[in-house]
Length: 231
Image (cartoon, rainbow, N blue to C red; front, side, top):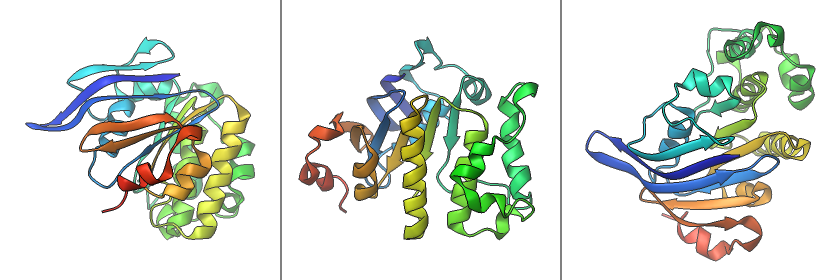
């Protein structure tokens, strides 16, 4: 279980997160919603260790990891799929997948067959360069690369951004399958309300660096949430 406890985050003198608290649980999807610029990506970067926090704590499986480097968090089973995918355009699909080995002991440094069950298109493209893939294929590759690390917490930053509807459906199917497997917590940042509502078990809505609404998704009031998503 992930517990983010009242964290503050600054960029210089500018405060991006104000006492933000969220949770993610094994076998469930936690979804963070909000407009652009409200602090969603900053929150994920704080959890993954890419941005230091000024106050509060990040707990993963009851261990305080607030001061850990990103590679230490990855070694503990935290995988981060950033907004924009950040695949290596000149490496092949297979080589991109193999970069996930960095967080693994030598005995686990292979691509699980499950990756190609989840993303069949990647098996057909192993020798193609990452930069030659479509945006949707790159997103699938980015998620697959994270799964190579055998995560217990999978963090996804707006996986539907700029993706065609058919691949959004594929990504939704994969997230649902991973959740049903029951050995992974998923933390999803999203602006696309219908996608989030279809998957979320727990939700939090952010505005101006703060969580303004949260709870179980079953009790989510759509009209209240949508007020914080419209411009």
